[in-house]
Length: 455
Image (cartoon, rainbow, N blue to C red; front, side):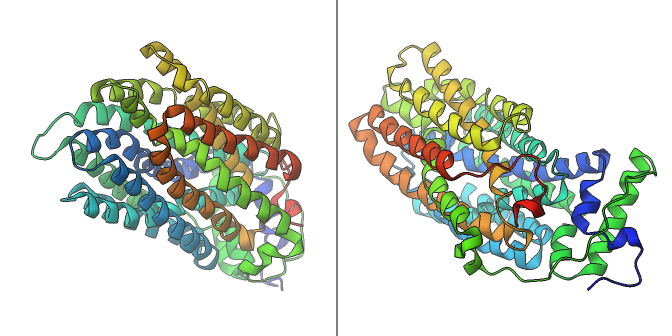
């Protein structure tokens, strides 16, 4: 029911009021805070790839134990994705953000002081719980706060900033891993990641709650207060004459239920994304988490492995930058068909790369295609579910990617005994199937208002 004490502008649906806002400093500040948190998530997720070779070379853990450690982190992410994805729809986007960062910081710091491999496995499991839903909530949060005409671009910005963490963690690993100043070098890399997340948690206190979420919960006064504050900031920066939103009746207030994801309205999208996430992680993390280990298995030294890994990591931001430049230009559905095929094709070339230049060139191509793909998929998945179920729907389907990454880490560890080509047949086949799923069942979403997509 509409509040009789508010103006006609306030009676307009929050979606209409957000849609009419010109993009300005408010949106850029919001994205900056969101992206900083995502940066440390990426730092943590990809950190183990560069520390793994050192952990194995030093005798801290075996290759099999490293595979289990990677799997433990992704199992933790699975539970975190489900728990905090659903929790974000129940308690809000902002509280989920802050709580996840605290959990991640605490257990990543615990891992830095692990006395043995089993302690590190447990720490990665628990840190994964905090990391698990971070990207889910980022996608949800940004999708709800940005006008439809630019939301794909702004999700891609969070990915661009996040992937810039990869060359940083690669450089820090290259610099610190060989050292033993007070602590083993790999421990300092983990400490840096944990300390940074605490700093971002402080910054995030300035984030507003999603007014779309508040309105959907029937908390109209709070939604109105947040919207007035946003509109005041935008008007002070873009000019006081904001476009008039369309006045619409208040939305039906209905709590989202996870069972609704399998009812006819959303069943096909849910099944599509479950299959999609089961497959896409095999290709993305199959290369990203194991590239230095692949090089070790091909006879490269630890120093060469870290060196090549660093140069490959330098191109990491190029992929999401291409996503940023193209996500509103081409249909996201089309990009999610073409890019997995390119990932599979370049992956088959990697085992034939002999010289250092070839290793870096092919590895860089795979990296660019993988992270371009990632930028697009994160914009796409949050568009497919209604506000009351957005984080639950994305979290429920995305959680399968975490289990897939956990199991594929163990499988890849076993396949390596048969050579690197066996691994890329496995990962390439998964990406081809991923492209096929989207080609057959993926809807088009570009520039369509969220509420229209949810009908």
